[in-house]
Structures are given as structure tokens and as C-alpha cells.
Image (cartoon, rainbow, N blue to C red; front, side, top):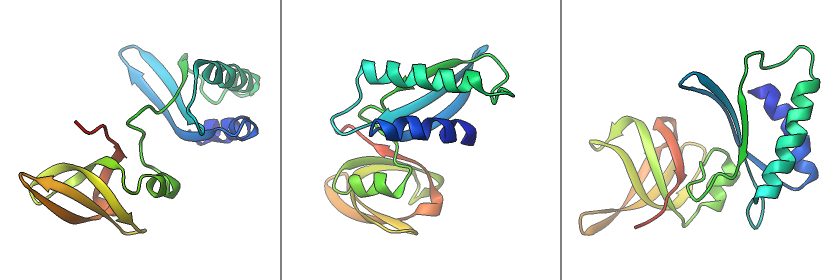
Length: 153
């Protein structure tokens, strides 16, 4: 999806929007190209429609077509459970409640939820509640399969 990223980035930058994620996935018989965008104050329906129109036109103008099969284009906000992908995402999430899943279990657990305390290139520190105790866990970033903001109940 590097081609889509290269095409959509200047469209977004011109509007001070941020590219959060691009995914191309098959659901049932249909393919979906999903582009998640954000900006300060949040994304609204008009923002999504604007980016959809501009990106669709840009993709249609390309020869050869970078995505030859039929697909549905969806532009949306990442929502309350925004993924943490880039260093800037982690930086903004310091102190926030996050969900982190692992490739290999950590202390017998496949995921943890807690407050992001700090991070660097190799590790992140998460404050979690285990039963009635709070504990700080230092997690190896190479073992993190998925990280995102989480809604705390």
C-alpha cells in the first residue's frame, strides 16, 4: 500500500490532516481499501468525503492501475481506539490508557491494558492493574503485535 500512501500524503498534508493507517483487506467476496485520517479537533464527514473524492480521482488517473481488482474505498477517522504505529502516536499516548497484544505471551498473558508510562525504540513501560495491585511492566517492542488507545471501563 506504499503507492496509496504516496498518493494520499500530499492530499492530506495540504489540508493539515494526518495519515494514520492504510489497509487493503478482503471481507467476504469484496475488497476494501481503507484510509484512516485524523486532524486536531477530529475528522468529520465532510473531511472524509473531500479526501475520498481527491484520492479516488488520483487513483483513477494512474496508468497502470495500482489496484487492478474492484474494491470499495473507505475514508474514516481512526476513532477512540486509534492504533499506535508511529513514534509520534506513542508520544501523544503517554499517560493514556492503551491496549497492547503480543506475538508471544508475556507472563502467561496475550495482551495487557494499562496506562502508557514511557517508551523508547526497544521497550515501553505500561502501568497495569492486576487484581488489586498496580504494577509497571517493561515490554519488549519487538514482541508487540498490536497497540492502540483503549476505552477504559
